[in-house]
Image (tube, rainbow, N blue to C red; front, top):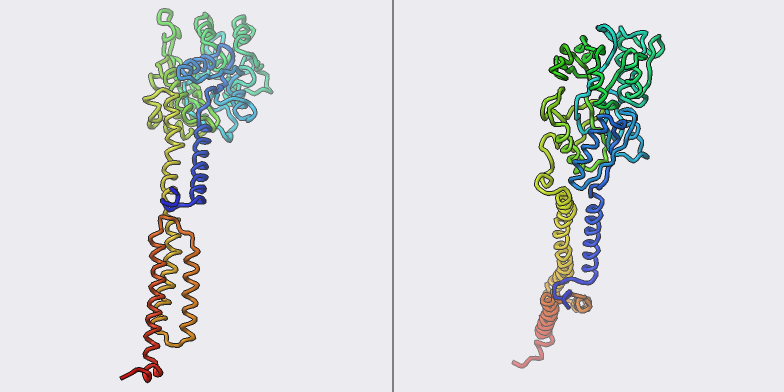
Amino acid sequence: MVLEIFGVNRVLVFSATVLMCLLLGGAVYYFIRSAPPRTITITSGPEGSLFQTNAIRYAEVLARHGVKLKVLTSHGSIENLQRLSDPSFNVDLGLVIAGVSNGPAPHLVSLGSISHQPILIFYHGPTVPLLSDFAGKRLAIGPPGSGTRALALTLLQANGISTNGPTQLLDWDPDKATSAFLNGSVDAIFLMGEAASSAIFRELLHTPGIQLYNFTESDAYTRRFNFLHVLELPRGVIDLGSNVPPQNIALVGPTVDLIARDTLHPALSDLILDAAREVNGRATLLQKKNEFPAPFEHDFPISSDASRFYKSGKQLFYRFLPFWLASLTSRVLVAFVPMLVLAIPVVKFIPAFYRWRVRVRIFRWYRALLSLEKRLLVEADPDKRAHLLQRLEEIEDNVNHMRVPTFFADQFYTLRSSIMLVRQAEERSSAANEQTTPGNLTNQKP
């Protein structure tokens, strides 16, 4: 009875219910699928390296927001890229030295750079002015899979030193290479923070008789390799009392980039970059405060989420609410508000369309009735009038068999009353015609 009163039927209600269920199901599906994962994985560097230290600090920051960051050790940048490029390997982001990739990789994006990473070359003996002077010596250039080895080979080859020449290039890890260097069995050692610990750097910088290579041609290196930056280590900055280093030293090095898969959730992208600001935004010997993270683009494009973060910061809700509540609020708005915006006009349209359809059915018989009435009132031929009366009977029969909701009862009964009025008008017209025929006129008394 309620359905009849409001001018709808069961089919209409069933259709609207199915539509609402589909919209609600889609919203719930999106709400669940769009939730950021609570656990992600980063591939860092060897045990004790600066890369691993940074990753562990990120994990501590993310843990405060209820997100677990698993830290995997690796040999360095090359292995990190291999893991990120392998869809079967469960990893979400990694630390990579700029310039070590073989070109853009599909489905990988950059979240920006987090620090400068100079390559430090320590050697024994008198001052070496050029890298080419290391030809024919024993050089420890880093283990396979590390960015240190890749960059060392690039710089040495630019100076005419290759793996096929007399120079011995040793693929040793930092600990083994440092021990060999300190006992004199290695002439020079190439180190970067992706594989070496800060303890190794401090030991080498404070050991007498060991020099740090000064890149006197630093500007030329940055012109040849656009991923390199010139860095300066001022005199005495390591140890003022001991005047370490004894002179200003020019260094070159790339930046460390945060590389992620393009499936990384936008909320997690913001959270990671916010952690990078906390961990890497401090002033150090080689960078100013808040210099990093920065949207430097090298081998991989900056992700759209990272670009938005650098321009306007975190998304609105994440600025003022805890991470879990901000995630819940944003997903509710994105999933259910559009559903309501779409469902409300659709639900309103379906009954309106149904009522319009019923009115069209009623008005169709009104049009037929109007046309029939005009012809009946002027038609004098008995055969044609009989045909029109038969048509009137058909209209009345069709109208009587119409199924009309109670909502349209007034229009339905008005239509039936109109049919009766047309019939009465026809009867009066027919009687008047009979009285005016020639036979009836002669039979009338004067």
